[in-house]
Length: 425
Ligand code: NAD
Image (cartoon, rainbow, N blue to C red; front, side):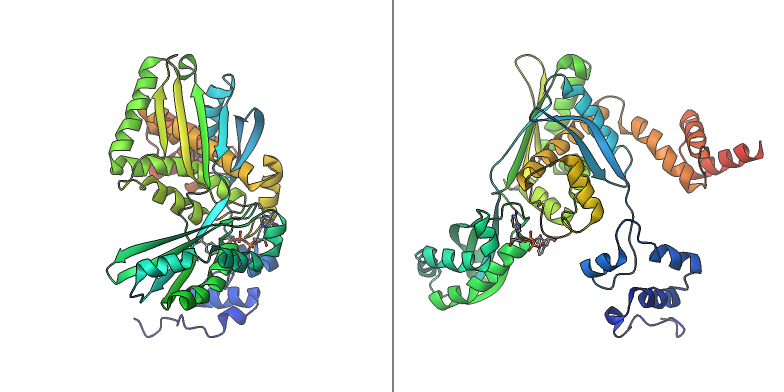
């Protein structure tokens, strides 16, 4: 390290005010005044709120919010706010929804709103015996858990089930307790973590073992959101398109290399709505990918079949731990507006909508891949990003983007040359 490199050891950084923190970062990184002004501009998230959401807050990162149109879900028309920086994602949902709208759109359901928290017990000589000792205390477990959250209890939530497994691990046998809790309209991480922490000393006392971790599982397989949809053969462009799409699904379901990208496409839609509503994208993503590997091999989150009518049927099922309360959902002003646009009354309704968006996203990605390829549609939108990167402003953006698409070369150097030509002439 160079002797003149400034130190990252900034004592008491978290105790500074936001303006002072920005100043300290500016000093460290040699930021210009305009950079500092950008950090200080927190857009639609008030600085004092952001400062309470995370630690060492210095600025916000704006992500575009688009609205997907054409969605009919369980007979109800919905506009879907989606927060994403990736082009084509919102358009993909609109297109898939347009092609299914006349046939009735999406039908959704949910397995429940149950979250699982785990308590790890080690150093047990008699794990099978310990397992039964815990299971016998179900009434005590329920009382301890429910006492943690009277608000949840009043809303009809609370403890539901007790499961205990003996795991063989590299470190010897462990006894893993699952408490299954209905968290209603909350994602529920804090709610169930509190219960697990409260319960752990009792489990240690009942078994003579030592409790270690006490934390929710993001594999929320008691909280599965499901969506299905039928796309009429005529609406999607005939048998060749349909069969290409089904073959694409077969490929994804058989090969983890393909499944990762197939599911990433699904999560393009899912995460965009999760983020727009102030929910935890990492929690939903972890749950989705773990669920995709539940049978021992990573596979597709969707299934695609040809119906007797010849139409294409798609379905999706994935854990969907999202809430209308808790985290940033009730705080972030944009999340509140997004929930108003969606018009949802429960976390279950939101989860079901998100599953439908994931399925729609997958339909469009597979269709593009099985026909013209992803780049044609993607590049038209990507060209606008490249035009912006080249410095295009106002109506220059569209003009440069159109020139890039027409030339068949969407590249920054071509965009810069086109912009210079435009401005010169
Ligand atoms: P929370 O604790 O802020 O809110 C939930 C509480 O709100 C409930 O326990 C209940 O007391 C109350 N409540 C009021 N109205 C309710 C209603 N209608 N339905 C249900 N509860 C209602 O939040 P949370 O949902 O317990 O936790 C979510 C947060 O935890 C997220 O910000 C997430 O990022 C974070 N988190 C996630 C993980 C993880 O995913 N591994 C771990 C830790 C924390």
